[in-house]
Image (cartoon, rainbow, N blue to C red; front, top):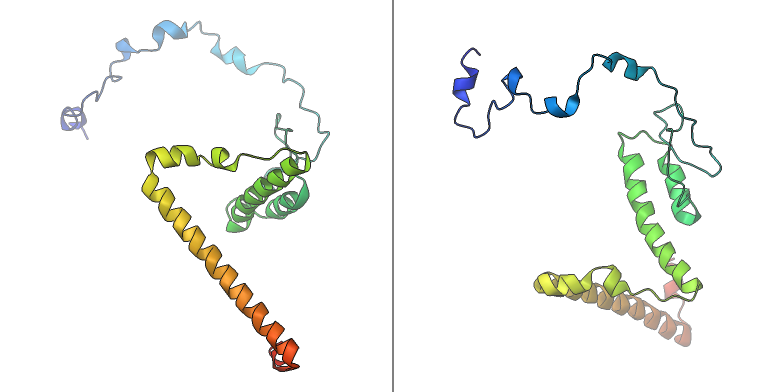
Length: 178
């Protein structure tokens, strides 16, 4: 341990703060000896709670300041309330919060449509930049999405067609499956 500076001397910038006489913050600090007094201050008043604020069950109360721009509402709010029942160290807390964010995005689209605004999903999802910088990746995702949608449509229409034929012929075999 005694030869530590020699061991790391080959690293550029190693030990620049080792010399106490060359302390880079000294001119900005203006040490007056009164640093102990900075702990004696009057705390500002806490923010008043006038809407629902979700907070961790690991802390006894709210923080002094918190955001109120988007209180929990709708299905995403229900999912968020469920998530805050769990500790921050568990998947039961974080996975529902991620799901709630996705649900909230869809709720926002429906809210836009309800107010007569049609969202520009291509711009909001960044597809223009994706097309400019990652055409191959965008084409791959579009192809996969189209294949999944086609498979879903085929499977759903196949089941409906067979039930219609069975209803038309009077066969009750489809009821036995249920």
